[in-house]
Image 1 (tube, rainbow, N blue to C red):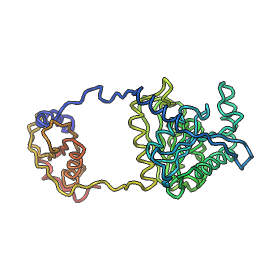
Image 2: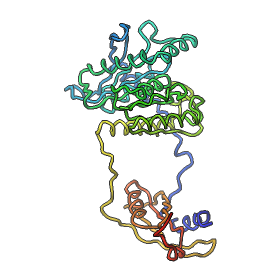
Image 3: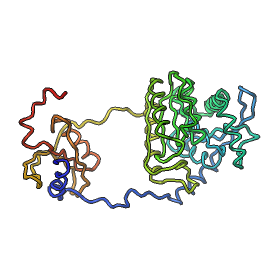
Amino acid sequence: MRLVSFAAALLGALASFIVSAQDDSMMMTTDDDDLTTLLSTTSNMMQTVNYTDPYDGSDMMGYSMVPADNKDKDKRPIVVILPDWSGVDEYEQTRAAMLADQGYIAFAASIYDVNNQNPESFDDRISQTGLYRGNLALYNARIAAAIEQASMIPGADPSKGVAIIGYCFGGSGALNYALSGETGADAAVAFHGGLSNVASDFNKTVASQVLIVSGGEDGQDSTADIKLMETALNNGGNLWEIQRYSDVEHGFTDIFSSRYNAYVEERSWPSTIKFLQETFQEIGLAPSIPKELTGEAFAYSDPADGSDLNGYVAVPEGDGPFPAVVIIHNADGINEYEETRAQMLTEMGFVGFAADIYGPMMAEVDMTNRT
């Protein structure tokens, strides 16, 4: 009952701090001017790279992109982009430009040989993807060759880190590469990778930290597929993360498609960059713990039963008003943990309010044995 009724009391008590968020604030739109500028930059700076896959002697083609400020050939981590089933085109080249903007040596690598670089018909794409999905050794060899080629780009330093990022067909390839025990990548990222196309029974040590980004309505990612993937990743013994987004179908990252979802882009791309930065040890994992708690006790009452409640509120510096985040305490009530979390929220521009659920009955509860 208290969980339901305390909201009304909080809204009244905190009205002076809170500003309402607009419903459309989370609706992201694509900035056409920015995209046009990015594509222009891509066409001016992209370098075509021809190479040979030593596994079978096939002639291959990829596209490299280096940071604009890499004139001194500073040593940087490498990110290899694995394409969707249409092969490397403007989409993968654009992602390479976006990664170069983050300071990485980016290489958009083809999985198909030069004679099948960009299959256009549905049947040709089925034929090409089937060839590689049915021959994991060949697929992994293509990825290994791409990583090797990327390592030769001026400024590239694999000792600083190597990541593979795959989309659709490339996403399932990135996951199969990691799960099969290959050691060439420190990070493997799969966007709408079609988990039904990933073998989850390798039982190999996974050398790559893994990030999976998936649509909640993607027909290729069933609940059973997710469970199998989690088991395989747990067995692999490395760090992993799965992000899923509600009402989002397959192919949501394709900037040039009607399936593109700008909201998911605004959430998933920054988290991917942070994932890479953490994997490459460019940033630390430790949260910033406040040195001082500036909040204070906050007394209010529950209108449902008149109970006196004692919360804790921390407010950002400045005039406000500010958005508010309500913290529901754990089993032992409000203590330094909830107060610290409230303070951390102020550093992000929010009012942090630790709400009192127990009220007066807390004094009567023995918390020494919570089993």
